[in-house]
Image (cartoon, rainbow, N blue to C red; front, side, top):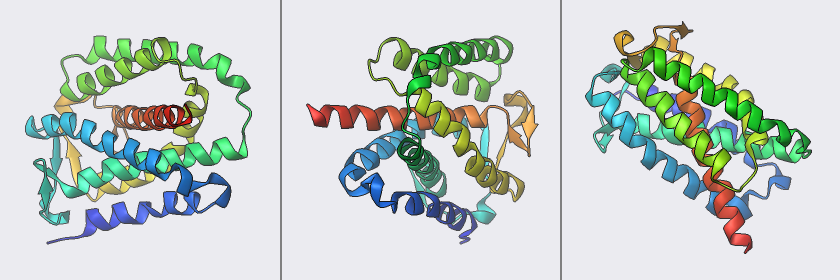
Length: 225
């Protein structure tokens, strides 16, 4: 039994713990919305991750695992699906506190349309690659729904938080794939990597963070009614 992957996840939990300790964030009052949103995210993304694992697109190195599984996935991978969005949500709330001006929200639709275009292009060129197909199909559905169906307006703040969250994301995934705790089937990716991290992976994280923040904002808005 090896605790490497587990300990790496737990180490990155320090980021949300430190940010949520900022008193002005009122974590106690918002904790139920945050926790529920992130747990739903873990459940939702366990499905495509399980498919990708069964299809041998993602492989886990047992040398770095405890051997414990849930829903046929290593508990470490499920914890990762919790840690990364939790980091992102904590960054989102911290940035909202420090930089409350939401004026640039008027430009968010243009950014979202650009992202939709990126998704369409990636699906056109990479639809035969499973990781590419899963990643950009999920992301385009989320963006289209949130921008064109949903009435909550938060996408500027989301994009801002996502860009900042890429710092811990690349550090965390850089460690995981270079040990390697996990690996990706190059045949099922665009094989355009940064630090051995597939091009698709930050967009997969984008979907996870977008779902978590959307659910958080949805629960919070409903509680105010």
